[in-house]
Amino acid sequence: MNVLQLINVRWYNACAYYAVSLSLALRRRGHKVIVAGDPSSPPLLKARELGLSVYEDLALSYTSPWMIAYNVKRMRDLIEREGIEIVNAHRGEGHLVAALAKKSLKRAVPLIRTRGDVRTPKRSLLNRYLNNKLTDKIITTCGVLREGYIKNLQMPEDKVAAVPVGIDHDFFSPRESDATWKKRLSIPKQNLVVGIVGRLSPVKGHVYFIQAADHVLRQVPGVTFIVCGEDAQMGATQMKDAVRARNIEENFRFLGKVKDVREIISLFDVGAVSSVGSETICRVALEYMSMGKPVVGTRVNAIPEVVGHQLNGLVVKSRDPQELAAALVELLRDKDKRRQFGRKSRSIVMEEFTLDVFARKIEEIYLGLLN
Image (cartoon, rainbow, N blue to C red; front, top):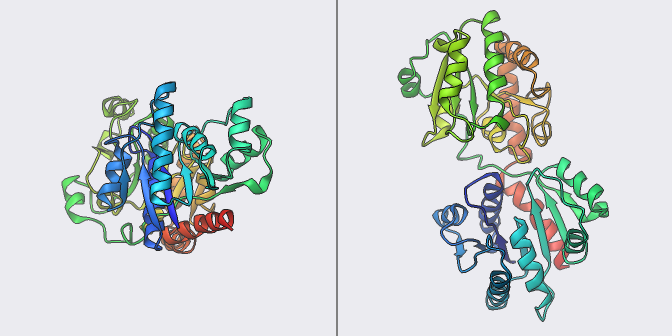
C-alpha cells in the first residue's frame, strides 16, 4: 500500500510518537509510507531520523482560508503524484485539509482520522459532517476515546476502532541494572528503587507520587525514588521543596531529561505512572513493561487497558496517595511478585504491543477500506 500519514504538532508528544511509530512499523511490513506535516517540526525531524520519507511542503497548523486552500492543493497534488491509496490524519487541522482534498480527487482515496487527544470530540454539525460523511474510519488510541466518538458524534460502532500503540521491544528490552548510574546517583546497594518517567506537569501526578513516597518510607525505609523528566508546567525546584518539607530528600533523585531513558528504567524495581489525566496512549507504561518491570498505575484512560491489575502490576485510584503507597508497599515487600509481574509485563508486550502487532492491526483496517 501507498500510505500518507499526516501529523502536525509543534513538539514530539504521544500523538506524534503514535504516528511516527505507526509509519515505521508499516514500512517494516513492506508498505510505502510518506509522513507529512509542518516544515522542520519535531515529528518530521524524528521521521527523517528513522529513515522515513518526509514531505514538508505543507503548513497544516496554519488555518487561515488562504493557507487551507494552499494546503488542499499541495496535498491533492501529492496524493496524485505518489499514487497514495490511504490518507491517515492524526490531527484535526490535517484531517480537515485531507477531507477537502479528497472531495476534489478523481478517484476514491479512503480517509482515516486517528485520535489520541484526550479532549472529547465536539458535537457541532461541522464536526459530525466531517467525521460521519467525509471520513471512512476513526481510529482511537484507547477504548475510552472510542466510546467518546460513538456517544458524542452518534457513530455506528463498527466505524470506530481502538488500536493501542506498539513499542520497539528490541530497543526496550530487559537489561541488568546500570551500575554507572547507580553509582552516580549514590543509591545504597540494599535499597529498592521506585521510578517515574515523564515531563514535570500537574497532569502526571508527581505531587501524589511524592506524597505516596512519604507513606511508603514509613513502612519500607530502604527505598530510593527516582523522578526522571524535563521541566514543563512545573519545575524540579517545586518538587524538591515538597520533598524537603517532608524530610525525605535523601531518598529522592531528580534527574531531569536523560539521553537514554533505558539506562534509568533499568534501575527500577517498580515503575510508577501516577497521572491524573492525559495518558490516552501511555507510552511510558509500555516502556516499563517491555523492559520487564512491574507497574503501578492510576485508573486513567489507557493505563488500565495496558496494565493488568494483579497480572503485571497494580491499578489504583488517581489522586489518592495512600492507595498508591499501599500498592507500592505491596510490591516492594514481595520480591517474588515483582519478578512474576515483571516477566508477565514482557510477555504481554510480546503478545499484544510489539510494533509488528500494531502495524498488523492498522493494516487490517486499511485493507478493509480498500477492499
